Amino acid sequence: MTDKLIPLKIAGIGYSVPQTVITNDDLTKLYETSDEWIYTRTGIKERRVVSGTQDAIDLGLEAAKKALGKAKMSPDEIDLIIAATSAPPDLYPAMACRLHERLGISHAVPAFDLTAACTGLIYGLSVAKAYIASGMYKNILLVASDNNSRLVDWTDRGTSILFGDGAGAMVLTQAEDGVDDIISIDIKADGNFGNLIELAFDGKNCPLVEQCEEKPKGIRMNGRGVYTFVAKILPKYVEEMLEDAGMKAEDVDYLIPHQANIRIIQAVQERLGYSDDKVVANIKYYGNTSAASIPLAIAESVEKGNVKLGSTAILCGFGAGMTWGGAIVRLREGIC
Ligand code: UT7
View 1 (tube, helix red, strand yellow):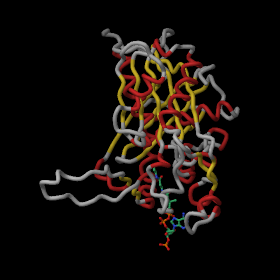
View 2: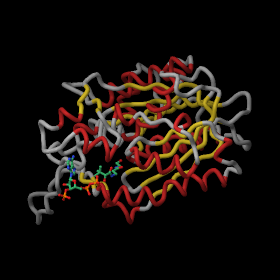
View 3: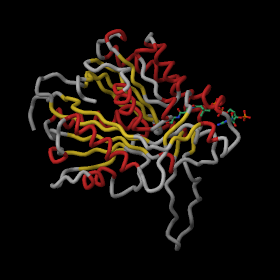
View 4: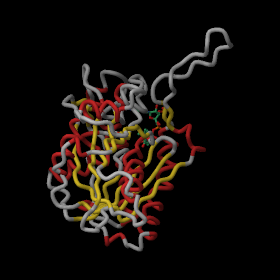
């Protein structure tokens, strides 16, 4: 421990998506819908889903290896693993423990999962920031990976159209040059809106006592309610985050938001007065990949040349809880 706060460096970012593409037209085989209906309301054309035995751990592992490669760090140098996930294949062992094993880390390190739904990456970043600032851990692997295609109800056309599977990972370390890549970060939750998106955990009481009511299976979402809640809070929240950091919208190069609905992304864009080239929107090809969506959006847009590194970005997300959060970050050269 140290009495001076240690700055954080984002050293590497990676992503991974499954090969299998499900288009809006494919979904018409499952229920009454159309590409036009889905695209105009959400901005989604297709999403990737896992198939066979592939799961969120496989995706997370690939993303983690890419992030470690960019950070030029070996898995053995990692001293904490955080997995941000709300759609893991198992409740335990934690995804972070599975990743510890799959990465072949030869010694014991702390590893835990963190559930903040689609805000998971920002929550994880905030936890990592505090650990690095305190000097408690030096090299943190943050993996955001969700496998919602196994948890949605594929008969519910209001919800299953939205989600896709994917993973993103970040390697976070101490910034030896003294420049903190997290210019500002904030996380929030309001449990009063918890019933807007729910995934009940299966289970029955002991057979010797009165039984509890059986809960509905799969993700239940009040889409209209989520949309109204988020459209009301998020643009204002992002504006206030900038103000609190003593910055103006024009001081930041990009907006890289959680990809849940193109109309919500546009509402934040409009509030910031950003042109399209300053806003990352890849929802068209991946749908809502939950906690993975922000690191996936960063790394994929850099790969495509839509985001230049050596820049700054506003990250913001929201999800079940309801949770929300944002960060203003520096994206150094060479991180993805
Ligand atoms: O991390 C998760 C975050 N979640 C979100 O960000 C969700 C935000 N919300 C949304 O994106 C939108 O609310 C949806 C795209 C989910 C739904 O759009 P909407 O305009 O709010 O539709 P709605 O739920 O109010 O439904 C309007 C109508 C209904 O028909 P009736 O009752 O008016 O006859 C639905 O049954 O649209 C119908 N509908 C569909 N029609 C064709 C619902 N889903 C579909 C569909 N295709 N896939």
